[in-house]
Length: 413
View (spheres, rainbow, N blue to C red):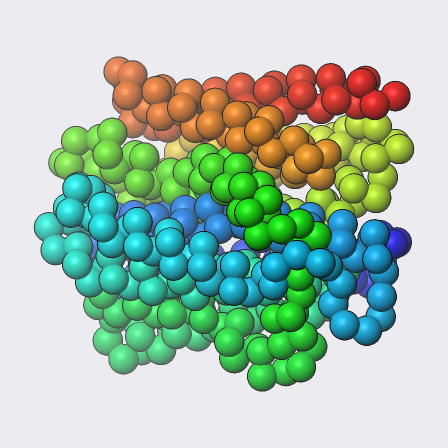
C-alpha cells in the first residue's frame, strides 16, 4: 500500500487549518460574550470536553493502525477488509463506557471542576463523548483505508459545525450553558456526514484483530492519549484544580494565551496523526530518519512562531479580546516554545504506536502529565508555574519515547 499523495496531504492540511481557525473563532466569540469569570468557566468546560475527545483519539489511532494493517495484509477494492470486529459498534461502545464513567463519578469531581451546578454540563459532556466515539471509529477507519479526502471533509465539517452552532447561540443571546451545548453538539456531525455513501461505507470496516485484542490495544492507546490530551487541551482543568479560586477567576487571559499559542502547531498535528502513523508503518525500513525530519521541522516552526508571538501576540490578543486580555511578550514567546515541545512529544508518540509500542506510548505521556502536574503544585507565580509545567513534562515524555524507539529500531536491524 502506498503512502499519502501530495494532493491528499494538502487536503488534510486544509482541514486542519479549518479546524484551527474555527477553534480560534469560537474562543474569541466566547471571550467577547462572556465576562472573565464566565469565560474561565467555559474554558474549563472546553478543556474537559476536548480532553475526553483527545482520550478517544487513542481509539481513533488504534482504529487507523488496525484498519491499515488489515488493508495492507489483504488489499481489496471492494468490501472493507479485515477479519475482526466492526469498528463503529466498538467506537460507540467505548464512548458509552467512558460516558458512563463520567456520569457515575461526577458527584466526586463535578463541583470542583465545573462549578456549583455541574449537572447540565456533565450531561452535555456525556452525550458528546458517546457521539465522538462514533466519530473516532469513522475517522480512524477512513484514515486507515487511505480515504484522505473524505477524512479531511469529516474533520473540517465537525469544526465548522461547532463554529456555526456557537455563532448561532451568540447571535441569539449567548449564555454559558448555550455555548457549552453548541460546543458539545458538533460531536455528532459524523451522523450527518454519513448521509453520503463514502462516509457510510466506513461503518462496515473491520479491525485486523479480535474484539478482545483490539480493545486491549485501544485501552493502552487511550491511556496514553488521555495523558496527551491532559496537556494538549485539558490543561485548564489541571490549572483549575491546582490554583486557588480567586487566582483562577482572573486566569482567563493566560488560559487563552495557552490555547492560542498551541493551536497553530497542535491542531494540524492532531489531524495529521493518522497520516503520521501510516507513514511510519510504511517506512519502517528508514529507521528514525522520518521522525528526525519531522522533529527538525517542528523545532524550526517553534522558534519562528515564538518570535512572532512575542512581537505581535500582545497586540493581537488585545485587539481581538479587549484590554483585559493583555499577556506579556516574553510569556507568549515561551508558551509557543512549549507548544513546539508538546508537538514533538505528539510525533514521537505516533511513531511508538506505528511500531506497536502501545505501552511505551502510554508511559511517555503518563510521565509527561505527572511531571507537568507536579510542577503546577510547586510555589511561584502563576505564569512561571504554567510555563515550567508545559516545558518539563513534554521534554521528559519525549525522552521516554525516543529511548524506546531507538532501542526497538536497533533490535530490528
